[in-house]
Length: 384
Length: 236
Image 1: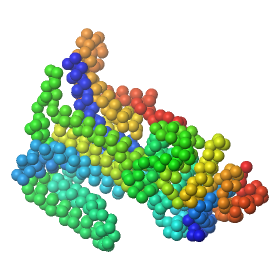
Image 2: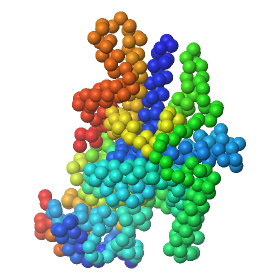
Image 3: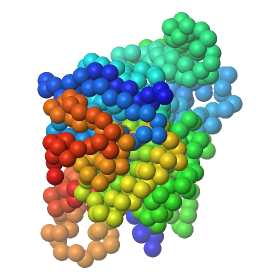
Image 4: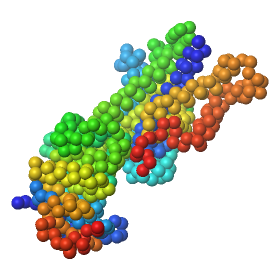
């Protein structure tokens, strides 16, 4: 019983990291069909956002609220990664819809740029840049259209950009003057420390569960519920589903496909940012943190059946539980008297990296037989 | 009476090939205008240029007196143009209800402010009411056609573009569709531009334009549609 609970909890914990990381990709790749290799770097951006938020909350002004920095950083990471994603869509990916190979190359290039960016640019400047981009994108939507009509739009946009750039520079100089660690470029890995209330363990039914793992499961759960509700209940969700299935006809029905693309990509990227927060709790944050997850994310989405959120959920928990079963050598614990050759084989794969090798091999073999994944699209329309 | 739709010397290309050559055409409110011609003369291309899926190289399109040359399809839809394409183009993995709701996106305020389906479409096409929760892509061809027309009507368009609504559909549903369109023209006074091969349906239109090699070669009232014209332009 205890063993079963252990396997289940560890499996779900591993699975929920995978899931929260793959959720954004399930939208960007699954729904929009964009192969975004920079998805891992959007996660990295989210993780660095957590790090910067943590340091800002250590300043005397915000010190009393230090315990809540993680919750705020989830929202900040969503916005920051979302805005980076929106800019990526507006400048690069929009030009490449319908040509997957070019998208793949271009986004790979972007991922390298982003990695080098965090290595060689002080994070304070990065934060300033992000602040100006966020303001520049959001100021024009703040004012009602009437004001826009009454003054010249050119001057209006120009002044919005000037204000945003100015506040960006101010933020950058404020952060770099008050937090010396952020004022120099730093290519080493950094650490995010969880606030005190999140450290330690909780005991349930005689088993100890680390609190950080539980928090990650909670973050995942909330993200999944929120995104499902958004896609299935809201007007924008309906528009997104329509455009992803038939772009031209949706356009003819009166849906602004451009806005839908931006929104979809922004949400997918924002979810990558939330995943970055979760990842930052598990280990140190570095420029390569995204690369560790991107392959797993694509595996989850493909295994679950592209374009199917439920499939993504089941696939990630499946992979999580399998990883725990193989990686921790649980089969030996369950069945100690197994024949020696089998036992040595299982023992051979009982490390984290070898378990990954095993899982990916199994997935590749599985996809040979079911290339469309666990839950392929069904119905009359598939046959046409 | 002012023209609802007016096209002046429209020229459209598919890549290098010149499809539409100097097309002039107009549609008035409350009028059904039929476009006839054999396969490949550019009827579908004309409708696609009107809704904005294809950009014209030369010529002007006016909707209710406003030039819409540079508008994107969704802007044209919001100005009162609804399009029922050949092949229906139902959104396959959305339910029938959601497909119908998408029709209301072109109303003022869009989907966010209009989420209640006007029941008049169930009077026109009673079958839709039984299938509300079914996936659009799982319906038969005839049902999809009815859904596509209902979806277009829910946007309260001023001009309805119909591309071969009776193609490959069983005769009794063809009659339903004809009746529904006639009724909607009588009740709301919208204009309809129809591409059609089915002679019975063509006869119900007020006026016709006949196309050949991308240009309009004959036009007039359908009551004067002679057997010679029919033999020449309708592939039977």
